Image 1 (cartoon, rainbow, N blue to C red):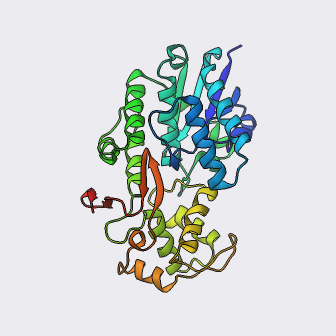
Image 2 (cartoon, rainbow, N blue to C red):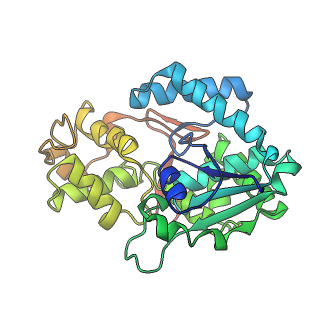
Length: 320
């Protein structure tokens, strides 16, 4: 009997795969590296410790359990060659694509696993007006996807390794450079990295795109954090990639900074409005970073204080 390992960057389709009759064991490989520090250099133990520290602090997770989960995922991935077939299930957004390049980078020195690996990746599904992720699909819809699986090639792996190295670099221009070119076999990677570049503070107001879109959603009538999250995912964000916990960190920051852009919030149903400062930001009459500073990572880049780099849609990354 053929043994199969299904790898996904979350648990959202675990049960649906079984209901769809898609056989195999399931591995959740889900370190959310689209957020927090992802520096080059640390060995596996130090890197996992760094990530566990960040995840526990940012999203109130138990640090030891988080570290154990990260280590277990790496261990299971390293033993993936015990299976006849390895199927990678990924969608197009920055959350998935950054985890995908990390995963392929880790498999790069494991040829026995790579020759067994198949990749399923989509950015839409026929009949759905909005597609935000595989977790939205029914078991019946998921059952049609294995026929789209393609072998993982060395070209894919080489491209993923180059992109992952650029993502972990301290030099922002390395990330921008890789975001400007297509990676053969990974058609969604470039746009996913471009979307992450828009999380640099903007030249005109110091806001990330997520922060600016949140202010726009509130100005357009989204009256609670929960409604903002829905509006960003379905109407405002050109490529949404944040889960609810990750997004809560963004919207809470807008409410709790020394000069807040929105009124205080306690939960997803709290009423929320723009402050005068938020209105000034929306009108590009103020600068978030110059007023509140910044302490945020994008891959291997640590943005602090009033960083030199700003993002412009027309010129890309420029020195401020």
